[in-house]
Image (cartoon, rainbow, N blue to C red; front, side):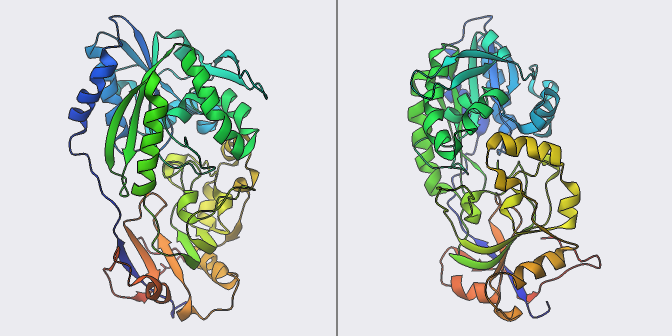
Length: 416
């Protein structure tokens, strides 16, 4: 593989970095404090995504509720993540720095739900809420608003979705995911409206991130404005999100997949591969995708591994298939849990992908890109041939010399 040379390029994305998060939270939470009476028990919903400054935002939410005389507690708002167990979901939050000690509020994790009713129209999907949240005097969800990895519509991943796939726990995730991607798009808003009609929802703290994973904006939306705020921030997210600077490549190498990078391990909007019948692929066309490792924060949950064509043995060895299957089966998108071809080493995995990318290529003419993960795309590596395709893009800057792609003595790709 000596003839395959790569170099680092810096990719410029839109940047809107909020300078003072605690001050912004004090400003926006004034509206929430007006809703809180002394002694009110308020459940704060925290999810399982790797969100920049998430622990800080959740802690500021706790402090705002306390300052208004309320009694906050935190619940994991997740479907089947953390192995769909109370202990596993509490651990997911702990990995993000959200614990009773760090937040100054109890973390109450349970898979028990209360049935609120069902949708009025067909297919009459049941509507659920976390039992501890239902027993509280009010609920505030805290979530990032961004493009979803399964579908596209007016409400994707955000505070509206968390009211359904999150606050409704594993029971709600199972009930909705059985209708596929179109069901998620169509039924999440309807179910979320039913949840708001319960009278338990005070509002939501919506987080917007820029193309560098920075916190770009924070908005508090009372229950009657949650749909409006969620949609507006989603439209902003479409313009802010990071994208790869090429339209097509032979091989995309992803150093690590993980739930902290995307709910699907690899963001489908970045890799251009959604793998759901009837859903349009957005992003670059990658003939072959290679994944080499999985983040520690994923605890072996490798949902999305099936989006890759080839993986390394070191990734394969870390997969907890029980946890992965729980998440995959709940989602209903089974192909994303398929075990790809396994290369004994990183080198072998990349060789297999290059040999099977759909066209005969010489190494020096291969279009190859390498990214650390699908969340951090500020600096990537590209081959000479791929660089020729993108060198005139004003968002791309060459920041290193080209050199042969390098592996250590075990065949692992040298650190990014």
